[in-house]
Amino acid sequence: MFGDHHHWLLERLRLRLGCREDAADLAAETFAQVVEMPDPHAIREPRALLSTIGKRLIFARWRRNDVERAYLEVLATLPEAVAPSPQEHWLVIEALMEIDRLLDSLSSKARAAFLYSQLDGRTYACIARELGVSVTRVHQYVVQGLTACYLAKS
Image (cartoon, rainbow, N blue to C red):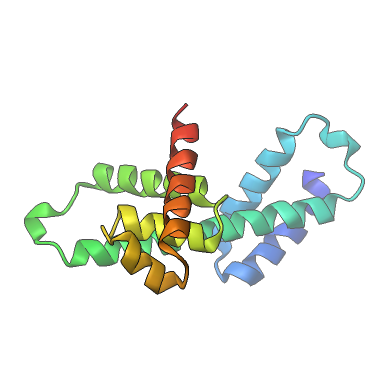
């Protein structure tokens, strides 16, 4: 499969990403995921599968870049003495990505309510006005977020 479809996948990813090196990384990761499948020899439509895996990896990369960009914007507002080391930076980005994956199961309003509450320290009343919902609903949303975090920890 690799010999038959690698060049095709690499070009497809390169066109989407605009960078041959990034495309090569994602193509390698795509084939690594195929190898991990229970029976990769039983794949009937390899290009459809490779395309789907490749797209998911692209979206995951874009999402990670968005999280990292937001983190760097916050860091830029801090004094230089507070700046984390490269190791700390990597650990924070990984933790933020895990939180992002964890909250991905929530609705957009539940996710926003949880983040407003936990990160911004906003009151439920303020969040309710922002989201156009009741205070009781905000409470339910925050509980959903806390439950998702708790279940992930278990």
